[in-house]
Structure formats: C-alpha cells, structure tokens
Image (cartoon, rainbow, N blue to C red; front, side, top):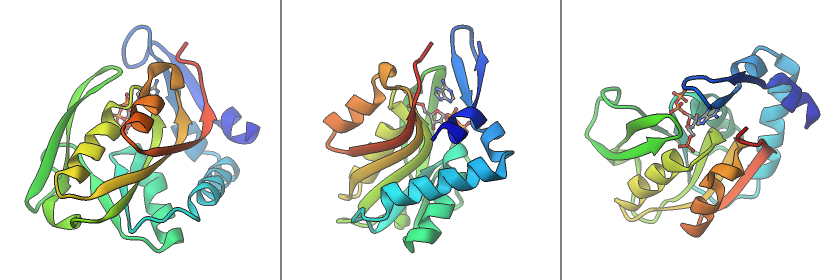
Length: 176
Ligand SMILES: O=P(O)(O)OC[C@H]1O[C@H](OP(=O)(O)OP(=O)(O)O)[C@H](O)[C@@H]1O
Ligand SMILES: Nc1ncnc2[nH]cnc12
C-alpha cells in the first residue's frame, strides 16, 4: 500500500486555502502504482453482491470503468450538469470546497438494483450521499461504496455508514 501512498501527491491550499488536496493524477502517471491500485480495489470488490456500479465524475470514472469490466457489471455514470443526453434524475450536494449537482440517466437504474459506488476519494461524503439519494429515487439501493482514499476526519465515511452503506477504501489520510 505504501507504493500507492507514495504516488499520491499532496498539494497544500488547493483549490482553496486550508485544503490539503490529495492528488491522484501523479498516481495515474505511475503505471506500477496505478495497476496496483486497480488490483487492490478489485480484491476489495470481488465478492460484493451488486448488479450495477455507479462511478462519480470525473476521477471516479477512471477506477469505476476498470472495475465494472473486471466484475462484469454495468457501469452507470453520475455526471455534473449538462453532460447526459437522456432524461436524468438530479441531486444537489455540498463539497469540502463548494457546491454542485449530480445527474444520472433516469433509465440506467431500476427498482431493486443493488449499487456499488466507486470514486477516488471520500471527504465530507456529500458527493457519495448525493448518489445514495439519486439511487433511492428509483427504489434502488446503494449497498457498498469503495474509494482509493478516505479522509475519515471529515465525516463522510461515518455518514455513509449511517446511511446503511458498507464502506471500503485503500488508504486513509488526515485532513491536515
Ligand atoms: O466526500 P466529498 O466531500 O463529497 O468529496 C469527494 C469528492 O470530491 C472530488 O470530486 P470533485 O467534485 O472535486 O470533482 P472531480 O472528480 O471532477 O475533480 C472527489 O473526486 C470526490 O468525488
Ligand atoms: N482534500 C481533497 N483532495 C482531493 N479531492 C478532494 N475532494 C474533496 N476533498 C478533497
């Protein structure tokens, strides 16, 4: 796991003063660490009983796409506004450094679906919880969520767990 940690860069005061930004672009530029990350995520997710993966724009797409292929599960994209061409469900949410909205194609999810969320990082959990609410709008359920990085001090991991989601991640960082 140290190889993965060493490949993730920390940028102080990005995108706002006081934020320690955990940057996975440096991880992606290191093929060995990147391959190891996908392998470890695969190990975490292989036995999860889900029939859809929802990956969150933009960094979540990178890991979600690979895992969906590996687990042979359909990949559904949760996207920022104005990107999805068919009718969508939408949900607003707050970030560690702002506010945004996520959309999912209305016809990509069906009642009874069991969803695994994939993203690069969980901080406050606002983004992942927005996906939980989106999924619940159609009578489906997020059962698991898996991340490369968690910042547990910011409360997202416990918020998701309280919402009934099983949470897994590869690496933990302090928020400072
Ligand atoms: O747990 P939270 O406090 O909600 O924060 C986590 C989210 O923040 C980042 O995405 P960002 O919105 O910066 O978008 P990006 O992936 O497009 O860079 C990250 O990729 C997660 O999706
Ligand atoms: N500290 C952080 N680093 C990288 N991505 C983030 N998304 C929310 N908080 C973040």
